[in-house]
Length: 232
Image 1 (cartoon, rainbow, N blue to C red):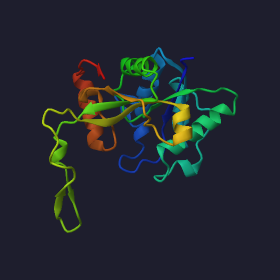
Image 2: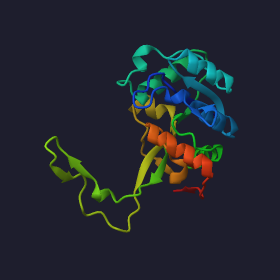
Image 3: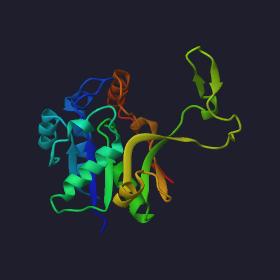
Image 4: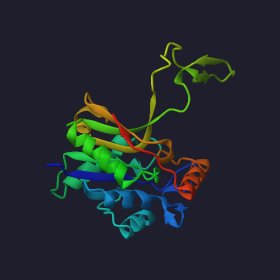
């Protein structure tokens, strides 16, 4: 059965941009954008927010998500991984007797992701009978130019210089992760043997981690830029 559980993880303490999940973007809390996009998706059956914050919980409920539990403190630190948070959410949901074989993770820091992005990515997931589908964006710089600097300011190339110029390279943009529950529970990963990429344009691939990222999101909404979706 093609049912999808959407998990939106939103902890209270964010160091680089304080309270970023509640920060107002055109009068709406950042988390509201992901909830609204999920609600408009044709393939999502249930939307839950995993948070340690009563304030985030209240806003999530206001915008139509469910908050069936409060995330424990040990899963709201910098040391907690997304895998840990997802497993905890799955376990809590299954306590109620409802099970989902397929999960979609929507990070609230990707407010420019649309319901159409979600629908195309989820259709790809089901049509390909995939282990997972992850949203990606074409990199704007050649990866062979990437360098590593040590604490004495000495630099070395991060990657080999033998990358073919005609190759197109991509970066995970953090917007959409769709996966089989079995994959994460059995293998502790979101990358399986049958993992596909859903290509999003840079205009919708903003991942907000800093105040600069936030300003970029504001600029993109100001200009309402868009481009054609691609999948592969």
